Picture 1: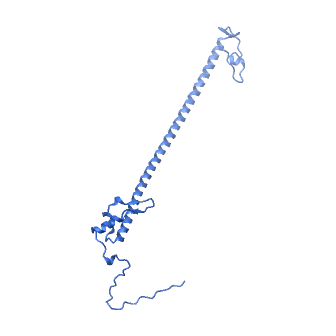
Picture 2: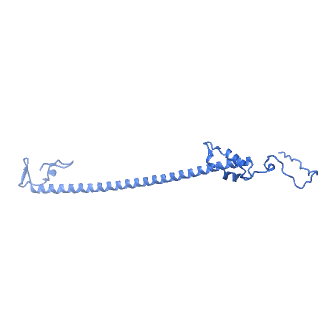
Picture 3: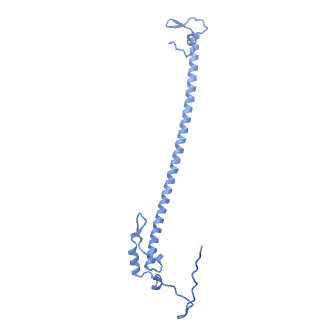
Length: 197
């Protein structure tokens, strides 16, 4: 057996396990120093204690490593779950955005068509919207609607929908007065009131 080197503070006798002992007859010698049975047994016991401490420390470190790995796995799972939640929210927002964009597109088209149908004199502009082919209508990036004028004009010429009467259609036509006979003088109008502040 080779001699071991001592740790800080140990004397050579403590290292060799011979402190305070008288050397007995040895069963063997290392170099020129005889080794006793008691010294060998003490050394074996000391080495067993060191091995036991090393095993205990290794077990504690393995346990700590397992705990750290478990915590890291849980953190990764939580992060992954959070990421999946955010992805689902993003998909839902994108879906809502597409739905709102489609509704806005239809609202713009309907508003433009109904407005133009009213200008052209359709008695029911809403019905004109439902009867024209909407596939030719486009909305550009600025939100301007195009491609519906010709379809409305063709619908007006076809006569499929009634048009407003000429009196109702002409802008600026004064409303009929009721209760005033022909040739009679209309009632006097009140004088304009001016307010001074």
